[in-house]
Image (cartoon, rainbow, N blue to C red; front, side, top):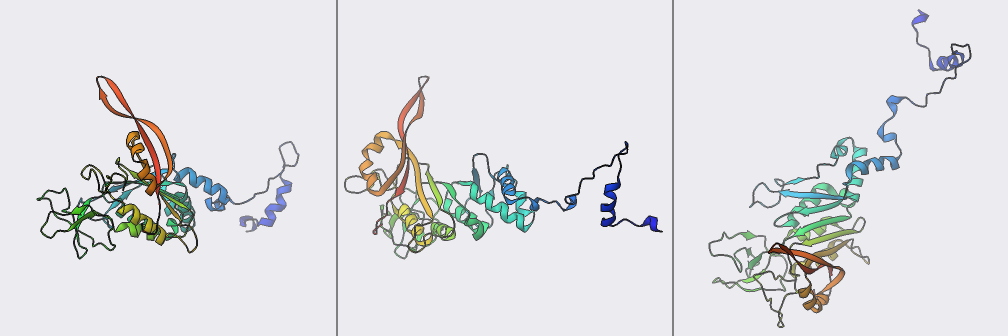
Length: 338
């Protein structure tokens, strides 16, 4: 009966010194440090775990492309909107267990730059993204880049109602009723050609306020870079009377930059401290135009960075035509009246 009993740990330890080699010498038994079944990923040092997380969750160029895939062109951003992540990321780490999920998410949102490449109202998708990732993950964010479009010009009625049949729209275009304007307007494009004589203004997305409210004041400094896919700076192209020169071609007002700056200061700054979010406007344009408008530009924009580049504009008679351009980064100057 005793031959079927398993030896206890003390017995195993006692026998370890009596195991002999074939030549009669005593064999040295190495101690068992731990049971392999109890060695887990969570038992690794946190420094090593973070290194593994960065290998699996940070893209090679540290930039994650967020692409908006709408289910319908006319639907506003909501729960039916899909967002696609970079495929090379091992996002399954976020679903292993709660402890690993928290550690992995901190690395994912801290060390990646999130790029939003979206046609239309980028602010709606950005605020939707910030909402679904939650407050904890929002506090990790450090870098967001977003491609913005020139705003649509719309009609604003006396009661604040907004419609899309503004300046430049054909009479048979579908009229879209937009969210009611909450803020007074300072920059007007003129009067509409309707019998109600409504004013024409730039469309200011209501999701701008939501975006900065979600970002909030808590967390590390966050750089929000707005990439302009057009050649004209807000508020810069105007004649000596302050009227837009080429409204059809590309002029737009300072309404949106001023609203962004106001929301940034209102929602992302703690008392007596700098705002957490820094907004940079990035773009490019022809050097001659930049030099002609530099005086106006410096009145309303702080030039953070500018570089001379050559841009290939056309192929003519089997040769490339190169034109000098300026690539710039700007920050809106703030005044109490802005």
